[in-house]
Image (spheres, one colour):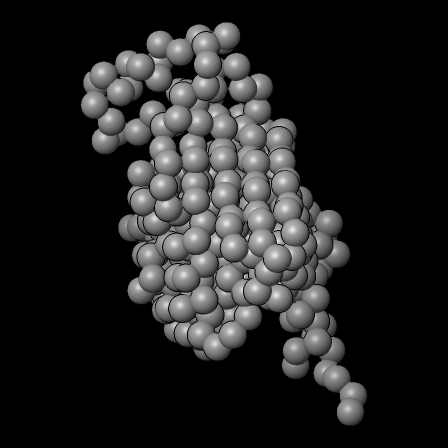
Length: 297
């Protein structure tokens, strides 16, 4: 049976146009110039961010701007939504994307630590695409998990102390992080499960939930598999004043073997506090989605 090949551009809608969204739009310039996709980006306040416009990317408002398309209007004609706006935005807008039957690429994978939200995003009819973010090696770990070959999964993330300061911290906790100097020993800021980690450090530990997703294994009920996997994953967050780059170290063990992976990625050209690998991973996932769309009628 012959397949119908799609010839019209895929209508891609970025949710969020900060460091990651802008970097992704730049990486997708070849596909945009080739007519493979049409790109829009949603901002809450377009008027105050209009100076950040990139040629070929139309801005859409999720707020009250009146001189540009609105989020509902843009979503109604979108083929693919790419979330680049954080865990809170993923929870606010993601369910509406999926229930509308539109595919969603999730960058803020930490949103899946909420079991109710995970069930909604996995329920369809839209397809959920989960990015690898700032780390990789998930193909090996997924294969081991699919064979029920992992018993223990741990991830240690090390960052500069000031990047870990959060509003909920006491004055003494914040002062202790600010007081760390190069040469001081790294300090453990958090140790526990991914759900609590993403609650306390939503911008820093998406990778931990992504690891849980990758090692969920096979079986019926993706949401339940993920819930069990997240209970197994242990997270350690370190503040190191000597850290030149963010570092992620994974240790997974079981009957399939012992797997140690470590990643240090260069910062984003848009925002030094963000891993540049995140946008690269998102762009790669977009290209995978484009390939899938090309065979759809």
